[in-house]
Length: 169
Image (cartoon, rainbow, N blue to C red; front, side, top):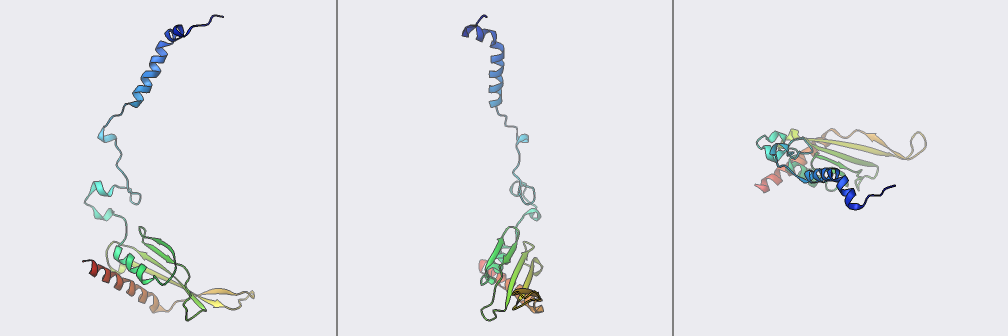
C-alpha cells in the first residue's frame, strides 16, 4: 500500500480544499441591501409603531390616567394581577374589617387610550361565608353585589383619573 506524503496529498486535493475555503469565506460576506433588512415588529399589533408614524390607532396600551386611577382607588385591596399593557387589573379576595362574613374581588378592564367613561369596565364579585353548607363544611357562596356598588367604584376610578390628568397639565 502506497502512502502519500503531506505535500502530495495537498496537491491531489488542492481543488477540493480551495473550494471549501472559498465557500467558507463567501459565507462571511454580508450585503447591506435595505430591502432585505427586517423591520422590527410590535409584539401586540404586528407593526412597527415608530417607523411607520402617523396612524395612532395602531398603538397599543391603555389610558395611563385611568390605569393609575384604578390602582390608586383599589390600593386598599391586595392585587392578584396587574397588566398595564393589556389594561387588566385583578384584586385578590378582600375581607372588610367590619364584616368578616363577606369578601370581595374586583376586576378592572381599561379598554381604550382615551379618558372616557366607556373606556372602563368594572366587575365586582361578592361571596358570603357559610358556617355550614349542605355537605356540613364551611365555605363561601357567591352572592350578588348591590347595584350601585359597581357604578360607585367606576365613578371613583374615573374621578381619580381626572384628578391625575388635571395635575399633569
